[in-house]
Image (cartoon, rainbow, N blue to C red):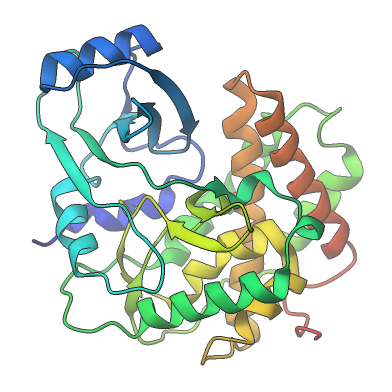
Length: 326
């Protein structure tokens, strides 16, 4: 099953969507329990919030099922298409298999989907120095090669990613104004603006391949041995530029980890493609800091702020077009 032609608009949802209406239904574990029981035969014994991203709030039910509650009335999120797509994936790591899809559910305005819980800890919770980067780089490079060379899976393509990136950049001052100065000092704001001023929006046209579309560190799961065990949230899968899937990798680990993944990937980015990954990675860093402003979780906030500060320290007085160094 194909996706809506509007799927390309997802690329503009870096912070809060300007195209889709936010769902104003406060969720609590009690509310989630009631919604689950009203819409299924499940008896809820335990609920805890797993996380919150741009698109969903996710809750773990009975330590067995993850239910995703969309944050926006959306024309682009299609769990039926996501389910069909995930069933065709043949990767060397686990992916969720959606079991529940409730259209027009009791107690909520948008379609709720649920899948069997994949155990693991998201990469978002680790610092770069805590991980065997060579090992994880090899595993991610292998999985991305498998995904990007997969054939026989028909999905709709995305619009030009530079259109929405340009729009985001035009509103850069507005985005930065949402972050307190004690979180983002003047020197960091100057670095960000300088980086964007140097970017030429010159991503070349290239072969469209199957991509995850939102491969952030929060969607990469590791086991207790810190080995890759799964990749979750395929709601933004599409066909597009292969380097879109490296944006979240750069956000988490910068150039050093990006190089380690590329060492096990069959393609090498040219300088405009490399600049795109870095600039989009910086956008992702900023957007994540803005997203967590409303979340009462000090660990998540600290992680977002730390990653932004680390990437800014690495790009200060540099150009997005700097060649990679081994």
